[in-house]
Length: 173
Image (cartoon, rainbow, N blue to C red):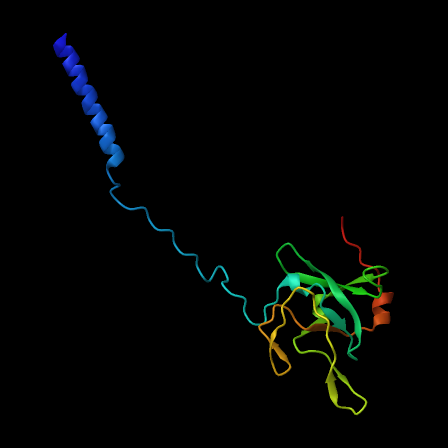
């Protein structure tokens, strides 16, 4: 019986030591480090000429005579990410009585420079452009904004009256 007890004790000790050794033995090879993301598949920084869609809402829209006719209230895009139209709010006050019109994005020209108007003497003067409330003032070189996240304004070849006469755009629910 003493031999059996000794044999069981020795076997148990051997099994326990192998379990302990398995827990403390380092792995044969270190786990592979994760591969860095490919820079071609993902952008790292915003490039000049790229604008943030969230900053486009509120951009003023002018006609060919540099008269403010509304502002962008929304951008419409397809399921594959292409922007197809901008909804322009015309008229109204603080959104009340505003007439929303969807204008194809191909009909809109985005401009980085501030709107210029003519003074009585004929010399150009910079009109105060109202920009969305959230962005910080852009760094400028002369009259051109550099590395800004949105354009200064947009232009369409329509009058305010033409936009107000256009069919009202209705959003899906």
